[in-house]
Image (cartoon, rainbow, N blue to C red):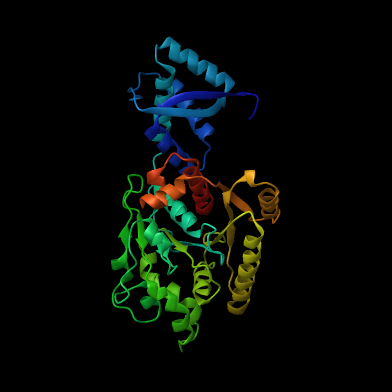
Length: 379
């Protein structure tokens, strides 16, 4: 940290801190810059400000320019305002000046993000769920698509598979549609999501998808079926996030094709995020996935943007194998590793509680990492 900044350690209302994190991510600013701007606005206000209820407070720390920090403390003393109260007022000023933006539908259509890796257990579902939640916090309308017939994403939110005899994404993909897919969407509740986060649940008929697609006589239906099925849903959302199955079959081909860069769409607007772990089998799995992506791009003359790697369940205490593996992932260059998610308990607790991570533990380190990944994806 630069020498001209002082560390601020205090207690602030947890809800205020939470809103600060969300708005800072949305505005693509660091916490320390947001707090600095809030203090500057507080000093320039020139009038008494409404008191903030600081009864239910938790620890908070950041860095503020030294000269500004000293002047701010002196101002609080002169006005006979508790420092915690002054800082809370300053942060509230910044929040008021930086509301969640109104999101108009992108002219190029919904942005599409797949979380894919043929290796199971690397965190595809956790990343899909967490990043989708963080995007919804930022004001985007998000549809989470459980494209894995195992249905871990569906179960994580406390829902069952769609009935095998009813309608499903797979039936829509295979021309057996019974209803509009929008009728199958489930809203995921959460105060910070409002009504912006929805789930398209899995159905166990997904295990039959590859067999159905390979027997189709329609040209190119094997790769384009997912895009055709999700057409009506795209019109309702800013982001469609796909939790991919751990396979290299036609289902994965469809997911890869779906997140390609479409004509007229900026590069990086959509693409694939690859969750991995810091061990050798993840590297082997990525090599196979990379070959599949490259082959599909060559065959269909398309471009699929790699949005980056997320190294999940990282624990440096495990020694050389994990630390050297992380170094190897980082050495790949662009787009490189966009986040490292430590092996912490909050995600597992959220799954057990059938509750979104950002509802169960919104102030946890894991929640903050999800917000940072969402910020990078939404750039």
